[in-house]
Length: 527
Image (cartoon, rainbow, N blue to C red; front, side, top):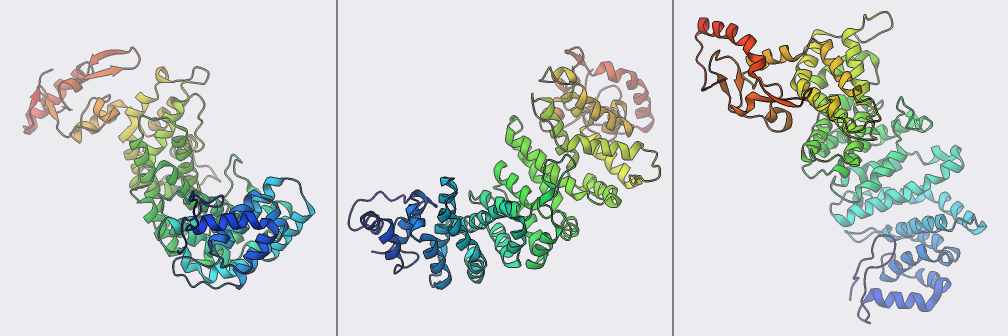
């Protein structure tokens, strides 16, 4: 019989057969009979992808004697001297798993044995040769399917383990920053679907190899930021392919909360020169913000930690776009005009308002910067000079959600009694007030646009907006979803009151204007 019962990743075989007809069972019995020393010697004449080798690789993780008897040397030799003939699996796949298990086995012992130090030196001295072999067979990393996803994860995890030496001797760090390694990692990332469980490990290695830039709060380590390493990535892979794949990824219909978080982290590693201009030009941010907004719509009744992480990661991504102070206003203008940036930022405030512990990392800062741009005297040294297009885009984006956000952030609805309940409410109110946005201006805009003029409209604030509109029977100028929508919630007193209490002051004036224009209106509702 041929190979059967593929092993579970890295640890033990998942085959439970007990019969001479099963190659996995026979190999396991043989391994037990030979013992570690003889098993390593016998494996020298085995094919790297044989069932016996699979069992040996699994045993390497559990029993340190296998590495002491030369398992790592065996795996290195199989990688360097073997040839890939199988079109579906490279000869180096199992040996790479073996090297990974050697690393993990040493890590588990925590004894700092001299023998393990020698094994480490042996592995590190062979690193570049191993990468050369994988790079030569990189077509195996571009194949689709779950098995290929797992292969990409294993290769990336092995590369990640070599990273641990940098903590011991940072001078060796540059040795591993070569174009071949960069191309392998990026290929693994671009070829792993967003909904694959293997993506998490691939992204972790990508983040290690191309660490994120530091943030102003110092939460990301600045000592990892070395721009020349991003130049390695830029030189090793076609940048247009990367940004095109980014747009494809964030449009993926099967993105989950976890996978979207992973993909935003991965994309964030390229928010630096020389990638940044291409990221901006290809409008990746639009797809990122749209994908985040979609997740919030799908999980609108949840206040989970994953949503908090997602909104912070999105904030880090947007923050990375504003690295050049001279272009901040122009970039912000485009985001305000073409994306749902404000809606996503508002969700961060709402999450914080309804949480006992969550503090948004970026969004309050963005809103304060927007307000500063609008109100600053723009003295010498300040680049925040708003253009007419910026003011128009900001006014339009903020007015869409101004009142619903004020309602949601009202101090009486805050969850935590120990924090300042008014903080987020005042932050938002100060921003919209800087543009002259208030309930009167919003009502006027809604009236002009034939939208429901009840600013606390349940449909608009807590669900989908109604497509049908009816008008006030007297003035024929103010619109509501229906009769029930004329009633609104008053957060100050907690009482239900008719919108007529607000509308009656303007009704007679609007009625006179209607008679002059004699404009036909839709079905009326009585006040």
